Length: 441
Image 1 (cartoon, rainbow, N blue to C red):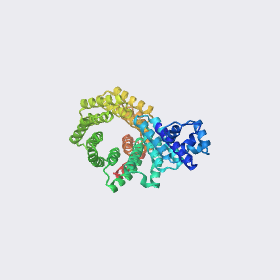
Image 2 (cartoon, rainbow, N blue to C red; image 1 turned 90 degrees about the vertical axis):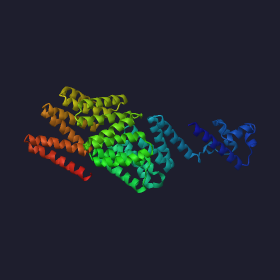
Image 3 (cartoon, one colour; image 1 turned 135 degrees about the horizontal axis):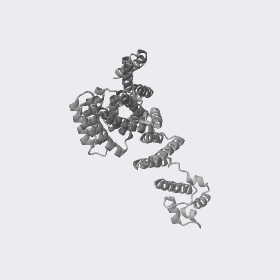
Image 4 (cartoon, one colour; image 1 turned 90 degrees about the horizontal axis):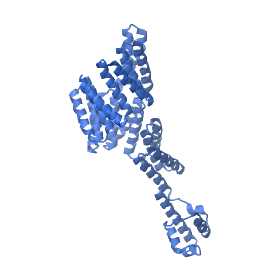
């Protein structure tokens, strides 16, 4: 805050000088018997600290109040800018709590002064800061407020920033399990990119996030299409980590099309790229995807090695969600090897971690896997119980793909057991959600 204090001293000095000149006084008149002329000169230039006692004496000679000398009328924007710089400094040093507090102060001050520019700045950073601390609903509130401010005064924000907000909101919805809301929002942003023929970093990130949504919806051609839109932009801007992550997503998409050679090429290329960066989280996830490819190719020993590499890196960086995904896949290999107790141990750890994080989506995924394990172990009541809970959770979260797959499996199970009335609602639910996915493909 030293910069602000200096500007405040300059403003006070300017106020004293202007008032002195209005009264036709010289610096000598103002200094007589109290100060030296040199002191008055330093005060008027903001070079000398002014105590409350000095201000009181000067205000008496200048025939005004102390408040008149303290008016910061032309420094209000400087004050707001100083608050913004404080937010940025805290953010740069990862002091997110302090950055958030300062951003709230900036918002309050901007609102009081009706300053649109800094209202947008404060809401912009509050949206990102809450996203960074996993408070996705709160982040959404600030993001929506910013878009409303932008709609009122559309020329205040650059397209890059608007896209950044759309991408962050899309990420929030995705993390909350609201896939369709995320998709609709990102499609709005895509129209802005297409209209402006934008090839900025943010345009690349937008296409990348749309590829993620297509991946979630199992629309592999759409995922590949958006990856191929984002990749040249990332290469243009030398965004190495983004290039590596996009290669990983391409590998995953090709794997799900059973194009194993192309999948292996992109996944191995991604590992080579990410191994040269600081992004351990993405490297761990790429090893996970390679393990999944090897599992599909029935290379079980290779798959176990890839998953173990993945989980070692994930534990290192405390990637809780990622650890749960890999635990479930290790359980799958254990089931194949007939090690059902080992599989249950993996799934129990995954469920515990999901419950500790209160992550509804991860809990649903783990219930589904526990149901599969129970079915293999011949525990039919546990199988139906876990699947029913998973289906209810997927329904609440709006996860159409997982909901359709789970409902179809449970419906077919009841049908095979000759329990048609129980099967029908699940098969109908599966059909509705498959249609929804098809219509939005």
